[in-house]
Image (cartoon, rainbow, N blue to C red; front, side):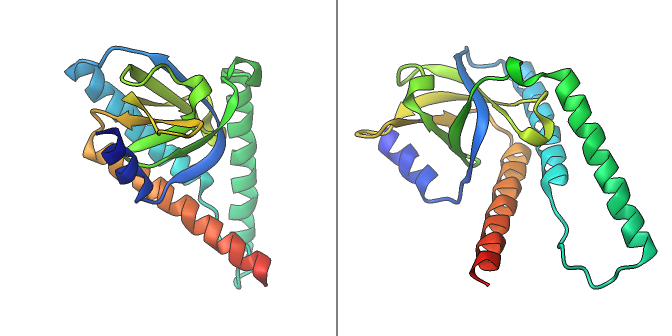
Length: 184
């Protein structure tokens, strides 16, 4: 079964970054807790997506309105950063680890994961909104012969899975665009 989960995860595009993440033992949430968790996760993913989405730097229209919007955007980014620092100082965050995830599972270093088969709550803190972690219930599966393990998600709603897929797609699209710019 773990091979099937790992193959399912590996066949899909994944968000890959060095993020603050922790994984703790946890019982499976009941239906009410799971509904609240899914609602918070969907909201957080929408927020992270909107905060990390960038407009093209080479805009042809240098109108006064566009310049004003750019200025307001910079101010909002500064306010968001201040709120993040006040709400959750960097010292209170879990350490940064290499994380790969998509709507089905997350790959993390084995050293932060409990034994295979254990139920866990994976918390991922995005830099754009680090005070509110993405909380993902799942079960630990280790990939044979590697230094990484997998948390197979359990109980995520379709809305959360769709939002995660959009976030993954946007990050992948940004990486492709940046790679093309570097080639030029």
